[in-house]
Image 1 (cartoon, rainbow over the protein chains, first blue to last red):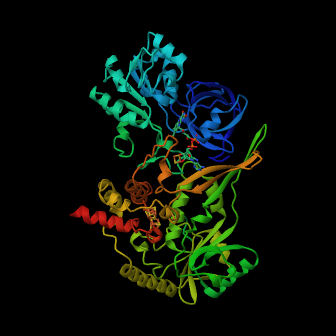
Image 2: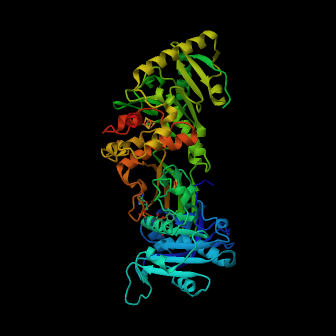
Length: 271
Length: 350
Ligand SMILES: Cc1cc2nc3c(=O)[nH]c(=O)nc-3n(C[C@H](O)[C@H](O)[C@H](O)COP(=O)(O)OP(=O)(O)OC[C@H]3O[C@@H](n4cnc5c(N)ncnc54)[C@H](O)[C@@H]3O)c2cc1C
Ligand code: SF4
Ligand code: SF4
Ligand code: FES
């Protein structure tokens, strides 16, 4: 065993969520549970193509299966989305620091997801919703470019219908059937009234989204230490060696991808 | 490391011993002539060794962390079989200079930290390092004296100092000790005195000849922290070609890329790692096209900060040994850490 050796896993099911994103149900051949924390990631191998870091999209569980939501954008990710049930892949991990539930228990939680950011955030959202009574109010704000790019449509419907979740959605550009908000994600903030002193805000989305959402949160009076983000960087090893994921002196693959904003704001390369 | 007894060997006996080992098939790697430059390569005789320079183009890291290294091979059928390649072979690295021994010691630390990199560590386990002290500067670019790197910290099996007819030998390991047990003799007070004198002369010479570092060595992390936004970064960076030579030749640069290769039958393949460099444009580029460290100045700053701030603070030791290779390799002469730090210091003070 070395830190670079993948464990063999089997794809049990593939569901196409959008034109470019697929949801994969994966099971380690060892039969063991992955044992992850929400927000952590795995390095996924397609043998002969390469490896890519992918967030674990399902909530932690004792089951041997877990889910990855993959956007086909390059070599490895396209190969993954083109796999069939029964195909074998490699998994290393879980890696990195995820969301520690103890920071969220008993608090109100504001989730802000942009685009594919919902994939990692989903593992935390379902951890919270699965033991709903342990948390205060739950707000979910979700934005995508166009309606066709919305992920997990069944689950979005569930969140919209639930009494114990306040869910709002927006797209940058709507179509004739679209009835919800149109505009960037910050245009959803007027819909909600959250108490910045009691709320933990969690943001995951494309790089440019962070600056705008953090500014919005700060305008509402949210203290830095109640803001959580998950960052993307290039990663090759996942174990703190290859140097690609570095932000100043920290390694996203080890110290992140989940960070408290209090820590990040002093790193000029972060956001 | 436990301090072992120093000793003295005659040069002739040590070189004969090594030549005998070579004759028996032992792989001995030393600085030797390659085309019109010096490089580490397998030697057939100790007569080939360039003891006093010129400095090798590539540091000895290439033998522990090869430029291209297969991490594993695999077979893809109904089952997938992965065979990890953690291999080392016994070699002697001979005539390594103190700056490079220190570079190796720093790599030992980072590869053994937290997640053990067994590919590196296995190679390291099999290597015997016989270093050689520098008594004259090996190039006009080097500044090892300014980086407290004229002597090795640790990480050697034997360390030789030329005393004319003899080598003074510092013994760093049992492996080193047993190698020379038959030819070693005890040091005398006059050997020790002679060594002190040689080192005094050397210190004076290096102090006179090597460029000065204006800030104090221990202040470098602070200097870099406080000059994070200095215009120096973009002024130097704007002339960078993104060639990555400075990363390739550095004994303490260890970033890598990983790629998969598949045979044409699509059944067998391997995963290989390669040296990568933080000065290369694609180093932080992700599939969406985003480059997280955009700007050549920012990349130059990152390289310098890693050496003399981030890793310096973490390991309490500069990750630039002052070997001077990057300054020599850089075509536009912008990367030399000592030059950059002096410039930051001059402008900061004003
Ligand atoms: C913590 C984390 C979590 C993530 N979570 C998700 C997720 O949940 N879902 C998701 O879809 N994505 C996720 N991503 C993004 C995902 O990792 C990238 O989209 C993926 O790595 C792209 O890989 P690729 O091989 O498909 O793309 P490619 O563009 O083919 O390759 C990706 C990188 O490899 C390099 N590369 C390409 N070809 C070569 C080559 N021949 N040799 C050397 N290098 C090469 C490129 O420079 C590029 O930066 C996450 C990323 C991180 C860091
Ligand atoms: S930064 Fe330059 S001078 Fe310093 S160790 Fe690396 S190659 Fe040598
Ligand atoms: S050697 Fe010089 S030109 Fe080449 S990448 Fe390094 S700093 Fe840039
Ligand atoms: S991914 Fe290699 S150091 Fe973080």
